[in-house]
Image (cartoon, rainbow, N blue to C red; front, side, top):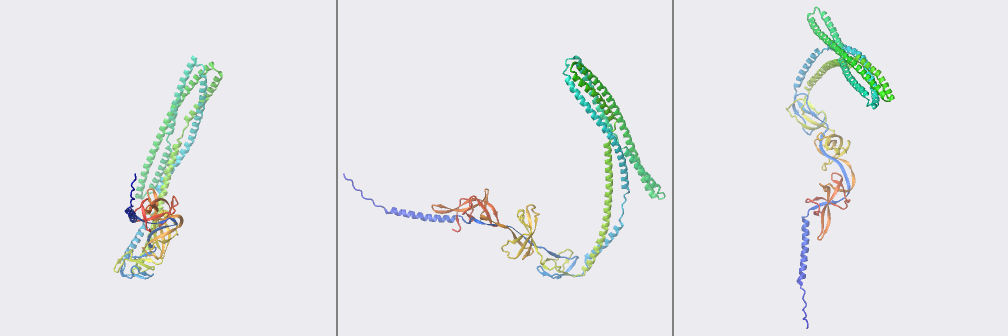
Amino acid sequence: MKHAVQPEKKRRPWVKNAAIVFLSVMLVLTFFSRTIMNVSLPEVTGQYLSGGTISRAVTGSGTVTANLAYNVQLAETRTVTDVKIAAGDTVEPGQVLFTLEPAESEELKTAEETLDQMEYDYGVALIQAVDPDYASENSQIGAIQSQLNAAIQARDKAAGQQQSYDAARAAVTSAQQTVSSLQNEIASLQAKLALTGSGDATLTGLRASLAQAQNVQASAAADLAGKEAAVTAAQGGMPVDVAAAQAALDQAQAELTRLTQVRDSLEGNEELKTAAEADVTAQQAVVAAAQSALAEAQAQAQAAQAALTDAKNQRDAAQQVLTSAQQAVQAAQQAVDDRITELTDPTLSQQLAEKQAALIPAQAKLSEAQASLGNAEPGGYEAACDTVRSLQAQLSQAAAALAEQQRADGVTAETAAFDLQSKADHIDQQKALVEKLRADGSVNEIAAQYGGTVASVSSVAGDVVGPGVTMATIHVEGKEYTLTMPVTAEQASQLSVGDQARTADYFYFGGVQATLSAIRSDPDAPGQNKLLEFTVSGDVTDGQNLSLAIDLGSQSYPLVAPKSAIRSDADGEFILAAAAESSPLGSRYVVRRVPVTVMDSDEYNAAIQTADGGNNYYVVTTSTAPLAAGDQVRLADQ
């Protein structure tokens, strides 16, 4: 069986044509889509990073002021008849500026009246000058000096008594130490012997008697210590003001005698005698008060002496009780020791006997020292010293008060003399002023003192101008100008007086020389800002605002970028660099963030560092829209 032969299919040409048409349409769409997208992308300008130089400078601005200007003023009230200048005029020395109406001024009349009053005041001051008298102050100082002499004698007497008392106290302390040492040694030996005969009834009873006797001795010693303290207190309370009170009475009586003699010598002058009688009566009251004070001091001394005697009697009785108790303790101790000797090692007993034998004369010596201390008088040395110091202070105060009064009176006298001289000088000055005003009244023209430029004119014809009123202001020709410019303290620290500045105004073409003459603290921001003061000369005028710059030098860096390219956010400073990236549709420019460290900067550029060296970065400086890392952009020059 034969198969049938299939006829060959023909290729369809429309498929090929359709493919060509599709590809053509896609090519056209791709071209137009790329063109449209490029048009919608932000346009940026920039430059490639390269090395460069940073030129640093301190810049700022201020107002130019003239260094020397003077105001045209009058010394008296006058009427202006003609003004011969206008603002902006240039005047020469001696040139007439204003003419005045002839007249006698009110200032001259006032000056003449003032001169008359000043001469009258000078005459009154001459009459009122007096000399001071210090008799009362000297009398008071003499009384205090007498009291001080008596107090010094009492203190010196008390010093000898105090030395005897201190020696007695030292003897008591030494004897007490010897007794305490022997008692400690005896206690140690007794402790060793106590181990022997603990079961002996006789020894036990003797020890009980010894303990009872020791208790009685301790009680007697405590009572004696209290009586000793009472004696010491009574001795410390002894008054030491009797001698001072006696000295005060003697001084008051001497003054009464002097006043009585003065009164008796004034017979025949009843007015002065009456005044002297009043002084005598007042001094009699002072003497009576001094006698009363002496009697009170003597009574206090007697009472204190009685209390001291009673305290000593009680102390002596207590001493006898203690001596009896000590003898009882010694007897009881001897009985115990004898019994222990019978029961124990004779060596320990021998040592104990020797210590106890030595204790008896030591206690006797202590009693003798305590008795000597009881009979010694402490003398009240410290209280006497206090009295002397108090009187010395009073004497110093009185002397100082007198010296101060004399100084003040001297100052007053000098002041009065100076015031008289000053009044005389002022009179001479006032006379000169009167003569000057009389001379000025004959001057009817005001001339320029210096040559220069008229800055302002404030008076017109017909004005009545008083003293101190500025009629015109003239800037003196040939003088320099001053400009003050605020800067930060950090900027000021880089400058020194004498630095030269240049003008920073590009539009200003005049020749200007500016030199830094002073660096001062800014009163509006002390510690933060400084004020730079420049001396300015050249083509400038008063009141002109001028921008200056002081160059600080330059330095080269491997990477320098425009300051407009430096950006910052919370993560630090960075730049945006545009880089080309390939795509199926061609190259695209994408910006990416590059962290940088700013090393230095000037007015326009900044020296930076990047982690990779920053080679071949095209840095974006401006853009037509805000940018972020990853945005596509188009370059302005493409």
